[in-house]
Amino acid sequence: MKVRKHWLVAIVALLAIGGLAGCSSGVNDQAKNADQASSSNSSNAKTAKDESILKEAQELNADGKYKKSNQKLSTIDLADLNKKGFGTLKTEFFNLQKSNDKFLLKKSQSGSKTTTTNGGGSTTSNTTPTTNNSFDSYGKFTGDYYFYNDDDGDRQQSSLTINSDGTVVQNNNDGSAFHGSATVKSSGETGVLSYDVTSDTNDTKSINANVEVDVVWSNGEHETYYGYMSYDGDSVLTDGKSYDGDLVNEVWVHY
Image (cartoon, rainbow, N blue to C red; front, side, top):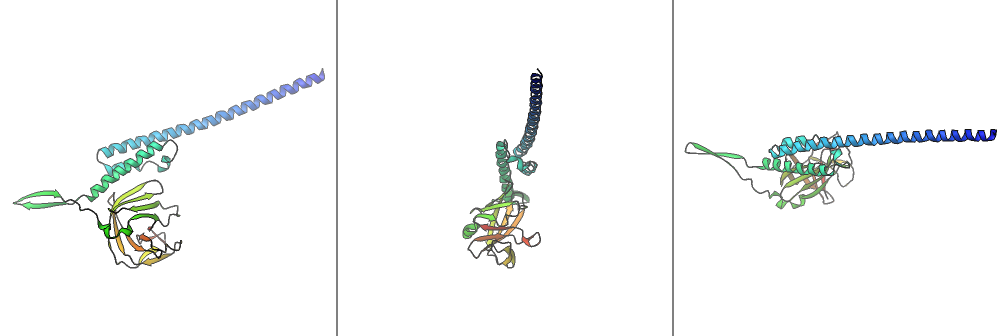
């Protein structure tokens, strides 16, 4: 009888331990589910917020307020757009940005107003901008470029494309893009700061420029690059400005 009693006690104890383990597992599962629900709710809230911002930016675009529309878009964290569930929002974001940039660029390229006086009265008209064919004689400086110092994680620049009609697109590491229009002319500028791009290092050098490329970005800002040929025969663009002490601000090498 004593032996049977001991067995009964042991069985009861095992059942109790199993029950406690089951409770513990249930508590852990509940906590895990709660964390997942919290994360999902946070993601949904973030998506809703970004969708609201995008809607406001679209309304500004529709009203012709392209600069304000881009400013509104800039309040969206681009890191979110690469997350799961943001695919549609990401597409709409960049389509709207391209639309804003297109109109801003068109506005910056619009002809200047001229006023003529005729018999005491005056009339105002817009001059039609001429076709940009300045790269016709400098085709080797059109095409795709990569940012030479792209191993620096602090730099946003990724690639640069100059088309034969002068349109320019700069793609950035965060997924954004800048749009502009460029003209090119011959240059005899000397002592321009650049990198020795044939050395795969950040060794700087002074170059003599063959051309000067002037870019007007869609936000109205101007930027000048000096173009030359490397020892390897690649077209190189540099803005000639120092960066972070002993580096060069922007150097682009043709693919």
